Length: 99
Ligand SMILES: [Zn+2]
Image 1: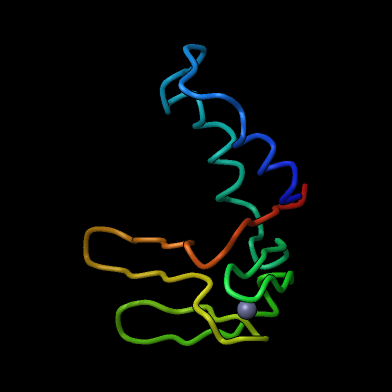
Image 2: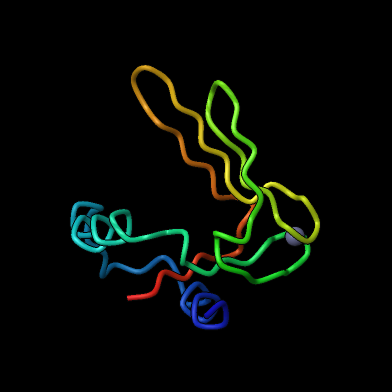
């Protein structure tokens, strides 16, 4: 999966054949309603690939941290406020969501 993503990212930019972000509404809605715990991700720090359910969850009053079960690096941060939920996925090289 990551090679496909890297090949896509290597395309020459800027390109003029883009759409605005509204065009992604359908696929993003499908992805965010899927069971993410069965998705497979890769830790940016150590390269471990595992399903999200294998990560370690550390909840607190503001949200939660998901940490890699191998190296303990932060994979995902979720912070909830009264007005929003912020999702930080910088700790994952990719997240592969299965159909
Ligand atoms: Zn790791």
